[in-house]
Image (cartoon, rainbow, N blue to C red):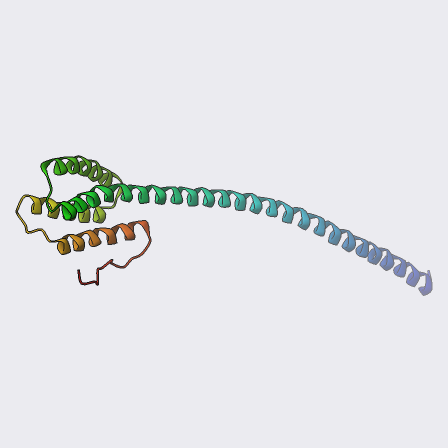
Length: 177
């Protein structure tokens, strides 16, 4: 075998191996892209499912939080009304009758129970401080002044505002009455 034939055989072998290598590289690149695309689609579907679950949970939590906030605001409105009515009667009529106190006491027991169940301790404590002042004044244990009542009521309302997340500061009266 002469050198020329050997060279041609070697060249044919190299071209065959090289051509096969190019074909193998091309096929492996194509197959890699197909697999990568499939994996990305699978991951994307998993992430989309997870995102949908998280979004649904967040919406439920937000709705639950809004519902609780509305319930708390309704509770605090209900709690404030008997006190407002009693103080208004005392201011407009000059004194409270036994019937006024009996009606207020019934409402007070109901609102005290509601606050004990649904309000934080700080709100419950400030409400009771305000109610104790009213009863102590009616029973003659303490001198009634509207200014003192207003201060206690504003402390209670400040705690209510903190509980419902409106404000963190205290409500104060800066007037002269």
